[in-house]
Image (cartoon, rainbow, N blue to C red; front, side, top):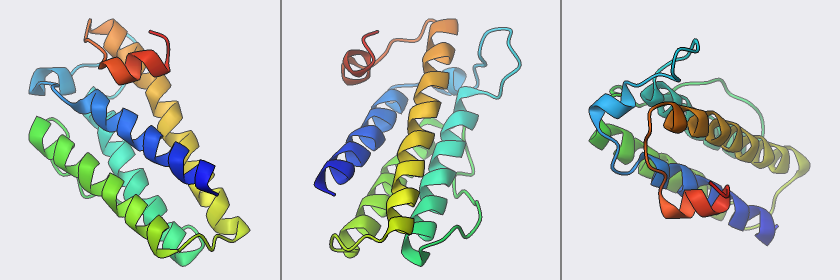
Length: 143
């Protein structure tokens, strides 16, 4: 279980690092000419998933999606929401004190998969907009 907790924290931290230093213009950027939501919309989904999976983890089952991030094109709001949602997930995990049934383990794996899927999407967005990758993110994905 320690491996799962460590991987979850690393995945959340990689996402948060990716948002650091992005301007409002960058958050409004799309994936080139491909149909897409803006980068801020990607972070909105990530924050909402973290919050929703944290609720699911606590309950032991899915409780629906909601997101507290009201300004996905405001850099400070995005960074604050990402930090708060990271802390929420890790606090809920710590409160379980390692007693994770199969449903809760599945919820954590789903959250890790969701974050990683967005990492792949955001790589394409960053390339399309010539945005720099933070060193930790670049080394994780060999960019």
